[in-house]
Length: 94
Image 1 (tube, rainbow, N blue to C red):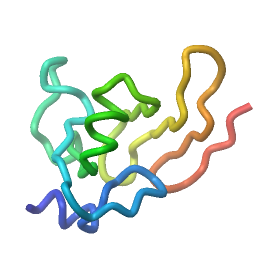
Image 2 (image 1 turned 30 degrees about the vertical axis):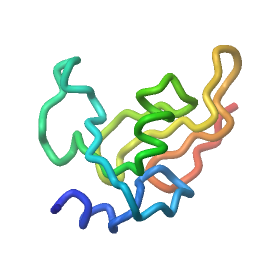
Image 3 (image 1 turned 180 degrees about the vertical axis):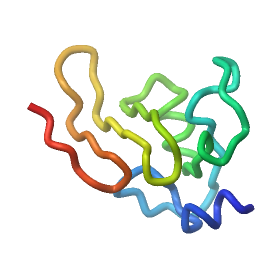
């Protein structure tokens, strides 16, 4: 519950305003050595969690929660992602 409150009871993916069906996501997966620290966990809606990050979708995330997460949205096999952000701030990528 503390995690969801920290993230404003909404999905942490930038521009997503979902407030229902929130999941507790490990930024560094536990299967890859990630821990349960709050800086390694973030609230995600079910759609972004299951299809965006775990389902081979078009989102990549790394860094430390809550404000130091690097997001790549619209990732693809070739070419840069459509958007890159740190927290909720856009990053210019050349």
